[in-house]
Length: 172
Image (cartoon, rainbow, N blue to C red):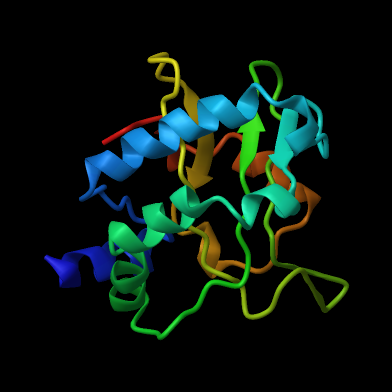
């Protein structure tokens, strides 16, 4: 099973991990709903979003429990065949409306210079369904992680790409 996940990750650039601890998922959803109602805990970085301030995030064990009690850290190491460690954690709430982010690459080439983190990082993204309103949260382009040449021409045609994978909010 793990080899299949490694192959899918290598070919597509992403893989879906399943929660093994549903109690943690329920605790996460409950805590997020509590936090969302407290305006002072949040920063507005992009349109239609709010980010939980790190001063509050660092004391919220539920986010770390989600990673470690579901063994995501071990699964990620097995899938990537690397010993990785957590260097950043953020919690972002996105609201209905136009996306705050257009098609983009975190790492790409521009004028023979690498822009963004190099070597590119691995991200664990979680999209809980807090209100039982399953919604599309992000679209990914399969295998695009293997290209660094992401200029405005590629950006335009990426939006037309038929290898797009839509990711929806989910609690499973």
